[in-house]
Structures are given as structure tokens and as C-alpha cells.
Image (cartoon, rainbow, N blue to C red; front, side, top):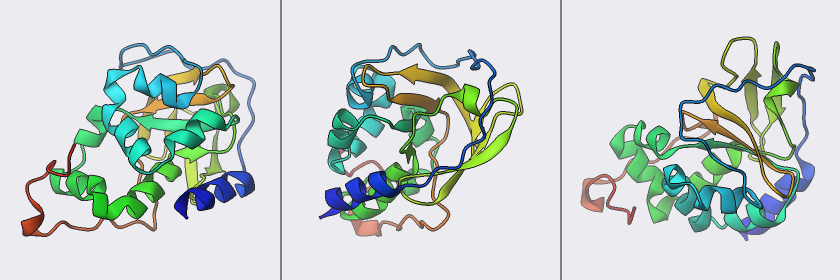
Length: 192
């Protein structure tokens, strides 16, 4: 069962992060988000995460985000999802590709409460729940993860988790998003 695999990955994920003692960056280009009781509730209360929220529900990851403390989610906004090529987005969200979607979503998740202060002024890697490393870069004015800007950093939830809002969908290096056949319908026809 896929849910068991995700729980096992959460328990065994190694972590490698540069520790710094600088304050977090406060710049934002998305509407301000207040932390709720957990990651899932926070995303559900913010309309800019409707695609991410539905994808997390579809892959059964929402339950983990509700009940597991000690997590950080690099959360792409709806705009970040819509910036993907339309055929790629449609394929990613197609119910037939839930395994690929789960792999992409768990790549956005680390089993560690990670604030931007921990990598401000430096660079380093952190293992995702998916197991591939994410590259953190706090050397510039805007903190980054891989090629994405963290546009609203350090949203703390009631259970101690952290959300880092990002402007791009992060794709694991070993994931290829399947291409939908022409008979599968137009992009976005996968019930989204």
C-alpha cells in the first residue's frame, strides 16, 4: 500500500542541512498565509493552493500532513502548477498517474522542521521524503530550493511543521511525467 511506503520514508529520511544563525527572509510575492493547526489545514484555508491540496488528497498524503509533526513542505502555488506545460500538468494530475504524482509531491516534503534561517548565507542539500536531495540556497536575497524561489518563507503551523511557499513545481531528477494520449482529452480534463 502506497501510504505505508510514505510513512516508512518519513521515518527513515536522512537529513543534511547547513545550520546558520541568521534571521529568516521576510519578502513575499504571494498573499500572506497564516499557519493553521497543521500543513493540510493551512493549505485548505488558502485558495492559492487548490491544485496542491487536491493532489495531496488524491494521493492520500493529506492525512500524513495532518497527523505527522516535524515536517517541512515546499508548497507550490496554483500559479506554479499552471506554469508547467499544459500537457505535462494534465498528465501529472491524471488519476492514472497517481504513483508519479505521489513521487513528485513527496519530493516537496522533508522530515525536518526547516526554517530559512538554517541555510541563510549558505548552500546545502537536504533529503526529501521521496529520497532525492533538494538543493537549498540561502546565499542570495531570496532563499531558493533547487530552481524555485521561496516566495513566502517560514509559515509555522500549530503542530510545529513548516511551510515554505515556492514559485515552481519541483521535479525529482528520476521522474519523467508520462505523456497523455490524444484520446485522454484536453489538458485539465482530469477532473481538475
